[in-house]
Length: 266
Image (cartoon, rainbow, N blue to C red):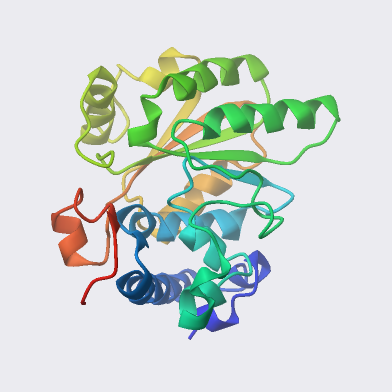
């Protein structure tokens, strides 16, 4: 198994794209077994596996700082940053929390459990970096469900004023906990339907650079996109189209029910 040999991002960087695909399968299997016995956030994590692998392949965490919104999609991140035992072995299931936690790892920068916070938090990290004359990448990961929150929109607006490196990964699975509703989601739908080419683009209208990844669960496509924005000198949105619950048919078919679950029979 590849996952058994992943002790940090440096081990992810040794893998080929094909091997990363196998790693993704192994991670989902471990997440499924753990969730069936322990419960936890299900759909968000299953949809973020490939993106998390690609992030840790391309960027240099913890020097490059990855901030997860709500952080209920951070289980794959924990698996790749020295905490895999908490997902592989039942006796270690309670070694980690369900959210990012700086007390667990230098790869976690905030204890977060509330929605719509990652862009604003990342703006703070980016501003501090610039004041100190440093050069690391700052990456905010935010789901489409969190994007409509006021603090997220304020963060996007402020990000433009930074005029420096800030990478915003919009994980768009066309879901909040339940269905999305509101004008913002009409624009995300239009962008998905036009492969990111629609003239009406919320992010560009705010002054942000923008790229779209239609196959947001394809490691190779994600690596290419992340490499293209690494070390960017201005704020950029990477809009990735993912499938919530990917890899487990019941979760793909009933996304709301499988957002979070208690123990269950496989």
